[in-house]
Amino acid sequence: MVDARSGKLIWRGAFFDDCHGRKACEPGISAASTAIPGAVIAGHIDGWLRAYDGATGKVLWQTDTAQDYPTPNGVIAHGGSMSGPGPAVYDGHLITNSGYGFAFKMPGNALLVYSIDGK
Image 1: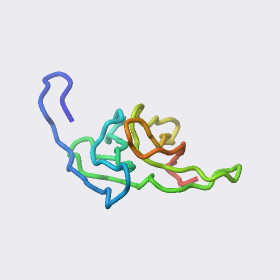
Image 2: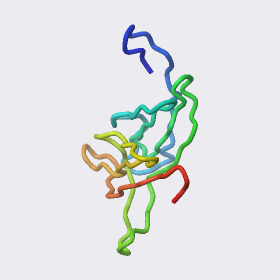
Image 3: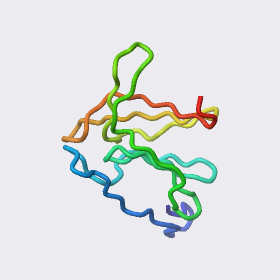
Image 4: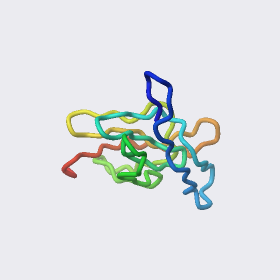
């Protein structure tokens, strides 16, 4: 995290390599990150979605999105790499895509919605 006024580095997140042999998996972040009060949310190329403490960079929450998901119409969606646009936050919901096959990344087609209350 960089202070926008001074350019000073506030914190640097830990490096994670959670590919564990997954095909077309790479560690790192190429998607835009999303800042909300108290946290920074980032989708990683390896399919992990993490929320970092805005002041310290400590991981507050994480989930592996590179998996299969049932959908309302019965078709299975597939998660994968996260790149391009960052997660959107609206009315207590976190909305993100998972699956990015460009440049030999992990393809997929999942649109994921998380909520504070789990509904």
